[in-house]
Length: 124
Image 1: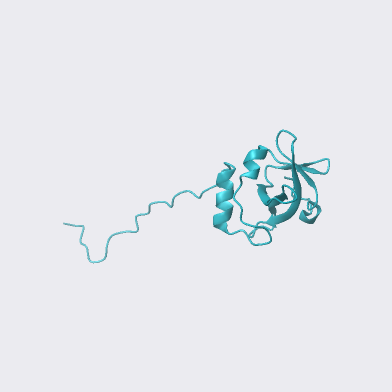
Image 2: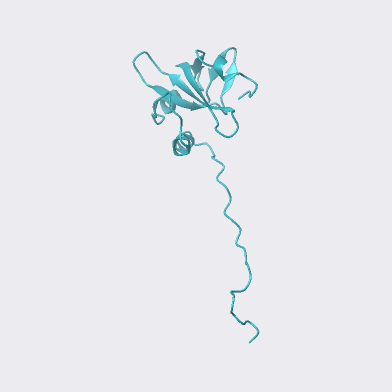
């Protein structure tokens, strides 16, 4: 998503799925704790329904509307964590897995040989 867009300007915008079907309206925007970059949006999917979390990357803002590259059914089935609260790292991980997005898991730590054990004589 374009990172130069003020996240406050996303609130109230219409949201559409990959097929152009209207999903709802952007209700809230969640920023990454480390970078401050907009990362998730909560989409109000109807008058009496809950909000659905969608990733802002790889979504696009086109002609004033948020276009999310996922099917409406997948979006509506996203885990529900309630809005207005902070998303924990575990909740974000659940959302990434739900959408099949690579979370960039860190590589395993290298296996280092830190030397001989103290008191051990390897010369024999």
